[in-house]
Length: 282
Image 1 (cartoon, rainbow, N blue to C red):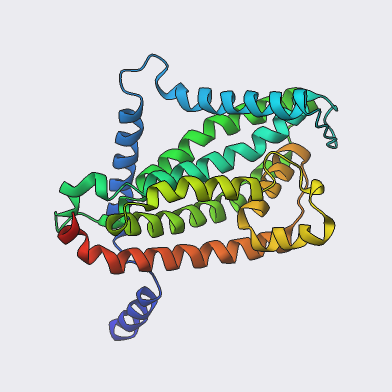
Image 2: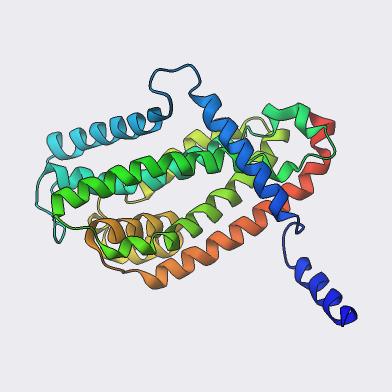
């Protein structure tokens, strides 16, 4: 009986990008993320409320510019047509975007900032880029809870589609981790990566319908944008589930999920190949 099970288990592990020592690594990742969150705001008065304050300040700034100065109006089913609705719509796009960009841009420096850990043979280096990514993801949950509360007050209802949010979180997390591994490994050898990321994320931000509705994009380009820009789909589905309570863009979501899985796999393989030389460079 054992002779049959062992070869199957071995073949299964060959498909995974890492070994199967997941439970101890998950426990270690939890500890590292907890320490990272505690260290970020240690000694500050507001403490862990700072992420929420930062997200709210970004929300107020963009709402003032686009809704008050530029007079951008938005009509969403079930929500009144006013500046608050535009702010909620904007907030629903900014929450996943801030978690995404904060996570993988901070992951870029995760290896070079932990040179002492890199030189320890027993430390699982694959966890280093994941720490800032999961920290940013957890911080975004505060903004999500505030968004759900405000939508509930404004629309007088809480949509049942909120239960489908993990379907958005999964591709978002995989995409962030894949890019995080790519930039974390590259930064060890090319320190210009962190500076370049600032330019690229700004370009990506304005190519994604975060501060403008996707209906503002010419129809002939709209479909291409949703198929080619996975985060455009993530932001749209996120808004549909939280604000409107409906599910659209399933086809585009499927493509974005496949792109996220491929990005994660390629990023981790790339990182694992480079990490053998990390200790020599740092």
